[in-house]
Length: 244
Image (tube, rainbow, N blue to C red; front, side, top):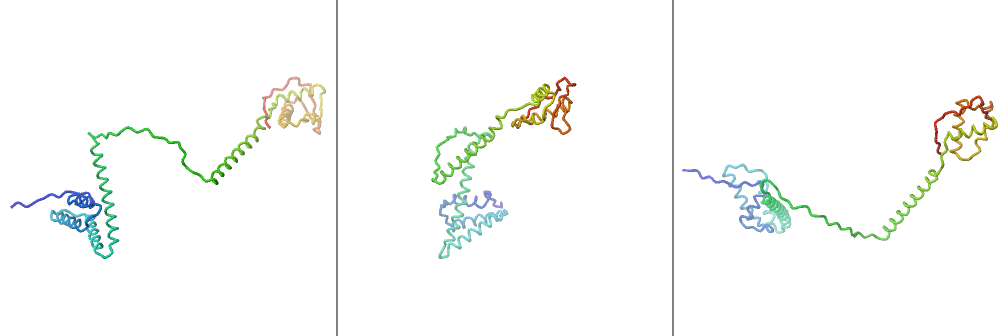
């Protein structure tokens, strides 16, 4: 006598099995009859055992969950049962949607290639629809005014520096030599009668160059400057520009 053999469909999980049972027995997924669904579910579990198939723990856990929902629904106030049914229905609908989308993508996949439509041009709407209260608009206006004032103050603070003229050390060397060439000597303070800081600094550097090259010399008390007539050549020096 040949032993009876049958093959059970394989499901990825208990929710997949529940969807199969709901479709097979035409149950309403939005208003599940827990008793009927539990009966069909336990029957499938028994068939798995008869076929010597290992029943995964998640299938047994779902069975216990269905038994608990059925037990709670028998109580006079079955509010908890309704909440549990809603939770189960939500999970089943989510899985059903995922299976539908997977089948749809499978249909669009031809010879290993997926054909997609071209990207649509984005529609840009530049209309400003946000509304503001008066206090917010006033604060923004004051902030913008303060920023403009800071920019104007900053620009005016640097405008004077940019307009200052530059005085070269070379020009002041010729100025000192020309002044001393006529008289041979002069008061030290006579070279610093200007209030232009750039000119004062350039004059000071020029006299240092001349002292270094021995074109001029100072008195012992540094109050007078003398021209050394033994040196006739104007000392060579690099042009230096002095900024205030």
